[in-house]
Each structure stands twice: as structure tokens, then as C-alpha cells.
Length: 422
Image (cartoon, rainbow, N blue to C red; front, side, top):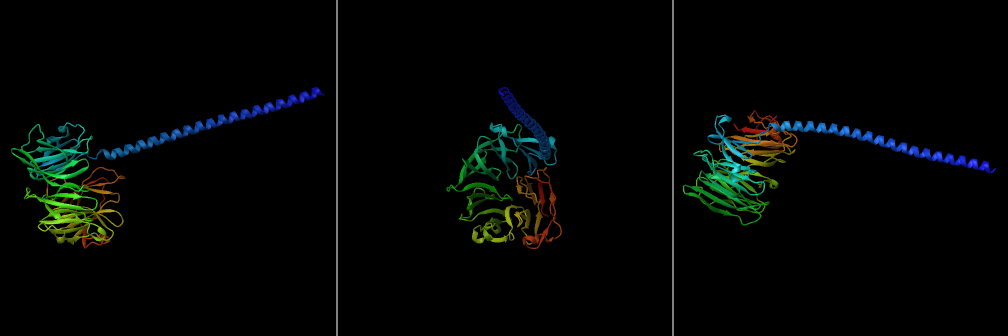
């Protein structure tokens, strides 16, 4: 009996042992299978990542090809030469000559900073002088280099270097107005007089309110030089007539809270873009040059309901407005100064997000150069000549007077355009 009991116990224990070993084997097999599946899934993810990597490489290469032909230089015209401004230098060639006759005019390494970049370039009225600001990567302030172009000498060297210059404009060939920068503030306007015996700098304006930023701007027709004092809520403009450049600045309109305005000039008339329209939106006003105060301002152009003026550029016979319509799209509106009712609208592509004007040249022409930019359509720069066509009902959407309109532009993104008003 005891031997039987022992045999049964032995068999039971062996059965339990086998079951336990079987469960252990199953667990091990399950773990191995899981690891194999994880390894295969990892390989699949890796193959997917490599496909994505190749896709992005092709995409980046395509975008690079789109940018490859975009020039990294700016070209503007003087009276006798065509100038090219690159990141570290300015070059010029006589009109009609090819690239083989390009000569250097200014180099960024003249200041001793090999990493300096050119910020702004200005020609004097008769193209006998050139001034340019160079900004270092290690400083917020820029240095202004003055170069004599007549007579042109090789090698070219700067005749004068001014430190801490923000904005500057030529009043005459020997008179330069500029603002000095102190930290992030500009509050002094100086006059640099170039004479046969040297250069003399004189303070002509000092801003006492720390909320205001001062900048020097020249009118598009080059008749006036304006000292613009701006804050977030108000502005004040002083003007200097280039026909009497040594006279003290003349105040246009004293600053008052809530009034923002900008001044341009054409044919002895001041054209003022001010936020005096309905809802404090901008509108164009006009007043004689001899009577600049606000009490003499007369409205000449206001945008229609829902439209907003974003910028203004004055040409000899036209005023070009960058507008944003009720639907949020940008367009250009051309306002003839002599025939105000003949307003023309130029529709811009739907992808256009910003319009940047180019006004470096000294020629007085009815040509408007601008850049269109968009983060979603980067394509090479292109030049366009726009011509007026027959009247179109397109302008009625903006409640403008009877106007001439043009066919919507079919242009390429990031395009450089030229608009000639006929």
C-alpha cells in the first residue's frame, strides 16, 4: 500500500514539474516572439524613416533650386551709373556697359570688420558723393562711410567715417544730415558740412522725450528732407528745404496724442498720410508747402469701407497705395495727382503677404519698384511693367471713384516688380 502511494505521489510530482516546465517554455517562446516582432517593427520604422529622409532631401533640394537664382544684391540707378549693392561691397558701371566694366566703389572691410554688412546706401544729388552704413555683428550701432565719386580714384578710400549712425540723407552734394544712435535710441540730428578745409558737424535737433524715436528721411522728389519724430501714439515732422538747406528745420504740425502722420512732397504741395480718417484709419491729405499746419490739410483720398492703407509711395505724378481689402488681400491703388478721379487698381496674387518698396535711385521717374514676399511661394525675382487697360468694374468693390483698372497680375512669388504709370 505504501509503495502504491509513493508511486502515485511520484507521478503527480513529475506531472506538476512537466507543467511548470511547459509554462516556462511557453513564456520564453512568447518573449522571443515578442522580441522578433519588435525587431521587425523597428526595421519597418527604420525603412519608413529612411523613405521620409529621402523625401525631405528631395524637397529641400527643390526649395534650394527655387532660391538659387534669386539675386542677393540690390541694383539702383544714379544719374550716370548703375550701382550694385552686395552684402560686403558697392560696385558701379556706366550706363550701357556690361559686367566687365564694373568697378568697386565701397568695401565693407574698410572699417576693419570683415563680417560687417552694408545696411543703407545714399547718393548725393549730382552723384558726386556716396554714403553707406555698415553694421557689425557685434554691435547694434552702425558706422557711416563717405566716399567721393568725383573724381573717381583707384584704389578708392573713404574720405570720412562716422560712428553710431542710424539714418542719413543728402541735402546737397556737400551737406549730409544724419541721426546718431545711443543704445536703442535715436534722438539727435546732426548736419555734416563738407568744405575744402574739412568737415564740420553741427547739432540741428535734439529730442527730449524718451518715448520718441528720430529718423531722417528724404522726400521721393528729393526736394525736402524730413526729421520724423515718432512714438507709439503720436508723431511730429520737421522739414528742411533742399533749396535752402542751411535754414533751420520748419515744423509741419506739433505732436498731439493720437495723431500719426507722414509727409511727402510734389509740385510745391505737401501730401500727408495721417490717421484722421473714420475710425482713425489713414487717409491722404494735401496742403500748400507754405502752409503746413493741420488746419490747412484737405482730404484728397480715403479708402473705401473695409479697406485699409498699409503704405504709400509718392511718384512725380502719382501716389501708389499698398492697400488691404475687405477680404484681407493686398492690392495696389494708383492715385493720379492731377486727375484724382482716375484711380486705378492693380490686383496682386493671392499669395502676396507683404509689399516692400525699393527707392534707392535718384532718378525722378513714374516707375514704382517693389518686392512681393510670401513664406509659401519662394521663387526667383522678376521684373514687371504694368500698363493701364480699359475700365473694369473691379474697383467698385472698394467704393472708389470711376477708375481705370488692370488685369490681375499673374506673377511669380518673391517677385521684384516695376510699375510704370502712363
